[in-house]
Length: 281
Image (cartoon, rainbow, N blue to C red; front, side, top):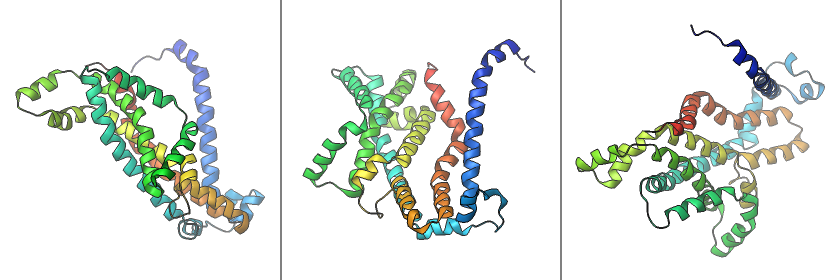
């Protein structure tokens, strides 16, 4: 076994304490919300969540899913997230490959433009986008998906560009000697080599779209198009009349579950994708 360097560990102790407190706080909050989702409104108001005097109220989840339209919000968010991730990858992966492998006039300008686009806050461009959408007659789900794709393209392209630039050019030379065309070289050889980065950035994009709230609030009309963020706001507003606190917290758990499972089962690929760009080929 490797000997522990206690001096080094002592220097890292403040960081460990900060991370430990943060993890503990997050775990306590999640456990409390889980307990509230299985309790009645009276138990939540009186602070008797973990006594479960009246049993576990699994019907809160059924109420949230069916009555409070969480199923509709969940389906909308899943649709937006999946289509957006596919669209972003279809645009950004070829763009990052070309920018990283070839030098051409305007290439540096494109890189700078992508970096500048990443730095522009969404709130600054909402009104111009809204005005253009009204003029062009684009609305509903199509508009929201287009916005999600275009806003995530700069970050995804810059992220993948770094990974493509680390790959050795001998792969392309060998493919060329074997008679492989440029598109096939990209799809069958180069893209699989950056799979960890692709998986990682796709997870980040999925979570970004899944948790997005501001644009969805502006550009969706009615519950039939609302994603989970706007849907939860509607549930909270409705809770003021119904008083169903248990159903509200059950909705929070349902909405939180997909991103939680992504982190649990894809954590190794996320770490590999984040750290892999520093390895030069």
